[in-house]
Length: 609
Image (cartoon, rainbow, N blue to C red):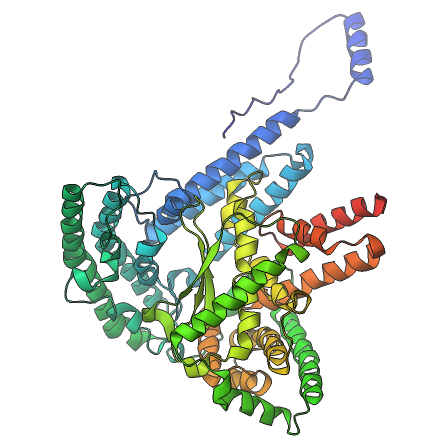
């Protein structure tokens, strides 16, 4: 809802009046408030912020039309957005204008809730504007994500219930060549600036493109929505839709993927970066410092993050040694890890067995949630395999958020490729992180917080909170009845060690000049991850700098807040209330989370047992 801003009153008086009237005026002024050239009205400031938040959100949806569709906003259904530099620059101009409007609002006259909203919006605007000042904005893809991968996910991401749903989908298929060409043009600018992804990390990326270069529409993933007719559409109309879709796929989509493949293999790859991270690129130090701040939401240096990582590696390694000792294993830690990596008993027989195991853990976790949470989300989630075109290069699992309009459940994606690298002893920690009480629980609850402004409900995108919560969720496994044997307990520690190593490796690659081989060796020496997973993860850090720092830094902060609450409240501490407080405001920066928790501690402390 938008509100009209009231005009601010400006008092200017310059008149000749009698001495008596002047004296009376002075008395009146002294007995009331002093006159200021700018008079703030609380209602006006609240309305101005509400209008500003609404305007910001509308610009975000217009800039990201596919995302808008998944939220139930159908205004931009025929569009894919833009990947052009002109569009990027135009959006930044808009963001700067919004920031100027925010600066004109006197936040002292806002409610406590709106003060937080203004603080959060300020951070988002500052981050998006600053990020646009670096050449990294032109790279457009990592080794596991790109516009072509996101586009290939439309058949599963979009709603397909009505005639309009199918017609707008076909319009997007027809629009893809324009969208694809804009992306290629932007990447050419990236090449010209010398800001391309590291060569070593991009091995095999072309598979994510040529998988979609098929002979005809029938063999394309883009034709999947037309395999089953919805009840709302008659046979004749649906047949015509199928023909239009087949034509769009064969005339527009497949040739566009071929065009991108040719560009990537003939132009981009020969110009890929010979280094192993940002280190050595123009303004790399300033850019990486920004990414550290952005993803951790903390005013902390890369050197400090590196140091925290090394301290955590030492601590977790000692915990690993204790678990091995308690198990009765007679060999060294290295021998125990070798045993875990090589013994067939720890690896699934087939993809179906792997998915069944993940689904069993997820369902067991569902049943334990009421012990730790007072409020649970309404929307469910499901378990599916990672798509084949990205499986071998991507992570061991990930979460796909539910649709904001309730038309699609959340998805816990499990990687069923290269099963000899997917050990069962890691599955409990992995599932708790990606499904519940991790990402699905946190994100679904955020979507259901109707009192929050939309920009906070649907696009908080605070890495330290989202991924910090996911890692914290892994640590809840013991309280939920998981990690009951040596192997699963060691698997949980290995996953925690994995995130500690990220702090060391990410900063090593981008701030200290580490090589890919050095990073791989460090993770191999300290985790029980398979070598394939380690290589895949290091390639991820090389092409997505800073993002991996949010996990451990966020988790440490959440744990510190819980410890503070327990020590302060004593018998008054309620774990269910604590978790509800942490999750009820959506994804927030760590300083704002701390404000919420401290307020709750103060209120809880004053209450009676």
